[in-house]
Length: 445
Image (tube, rainbow, N blue to C red):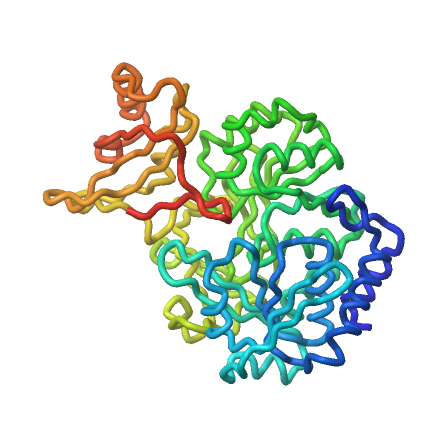
C-alpha cells in the first residue's frame, strides 16, 4: 500500500464522505479503493493513460485513488465535459473508465500517441494527472501534472474534525484541492446532489458543513437566489473563495450577511497548483504567500510564480507563459503593500484600453457592487473607432431594470469613486450574468 492510501486507511472509522443520503467511513473508502484496484490491476497496465469518466461521487473518488495506486495517468472527465474524444486524442488515452456501483465500465480505445511529457512521471513510478482548462478564451489546454508531487504536501495536513463542502469537480485544480485537503486531514467531505444554491445550502444545513470553498460568482448566486435565508447555515465557520477576483463590494455584502463566518481568499492556478496563503483579514482581498516552497515576484505589474508543483507542460499549447528558468507568468496583475500583502488588481488579458488609459474591470465592478440595488454586474470592453475601446457594464438589478433615475444615480455614484474614463459609457440591464460550469464569469466581448 502506498503512503497516500496508508494515510487514508489510518483514519479508520472516522466519517469520510456524505453522499446520496449516506455517510461512508474512511475504512469503507479504503476498501472501495482496494476493490477497484484489484479489478483494474489485472487488466490495465501500470502507467496507462486513462480517462476517468465520472462526476465527484464516492465511487468516482475511490476509482481516482485506485488509478493513482496503479500509477496511471488520470484524465478526469465529468458529465459537463464536451468533446471527450478530443481530450482522449490530446492526452493519448488508451482507456475510458466509468464507475458503476460495484463494477467498472471499461472502454478500450485505439492505441494513443506516445507523449514525452509523461516520461519523467513514469520513470519515477508516479501517477500522473491531466487537467484541461475551461476553454473560455480559446481551445482548452491540457496540462500534465506529476500527481505524486501534487499530492505530497497534503500528507502533512493536521487531522481536522470539520465538514468540507465539495462544490467543484476534481477535473478542476480548486475542486481537487478541496478533495485532497479533506481526505488527507481525516475530515468529512459532503457531496451535494446538485451544484446550485438551494442544493448547496440544503447540504450545509443537513450535514453541518463548516467549510465552503466557492467562487465569488457562486457566492453571489447564493445571495441572489435567497437560498441562504431558507436554510440554517449557522454551522459555517469558513468560506474560502478563489478562481476569479472578488469584488470588494460583494465581499462587504457577504460579511454583513454572514458576520460569524471567516472569509479567506485562496490562490492557485491549474499550472502551479494551490498555494498556501494568508488573507489580511476577513474583509480584505489582500493576501500573502506563506508557503516556503513558493517563489514569487512582480514583473511589469504581473505576478510570476515558481513552484515545485508546476506542470510538466501543455499537451496542445506552446509554453509561452513559462520562462526558460521555470517562472510561470500567471497573467494576474498585482500590487504589493509595505507589509508584503498582494492585491490582485485584474487579469492582464482583461485590461480595457480606453484611448491609451488602462481600466481594470475588477475595480469598476467593485465600485458598482457598492451601489444600493445592484445584485450582480460584469464589466468588459466594447470596440470603439475613436478610443479603441469603451467600458460597458452589464447590470442585474432586479426591479430597477431600465429605470432612468436608477442609472443616473449610479453614474453619479461611480464618478465619486472612479476616474471619469473608468465610468461605463454604456449600462445595459440583463436578467442574469452568465458563468461557466466552474462558476466563473464569462467575459468574452
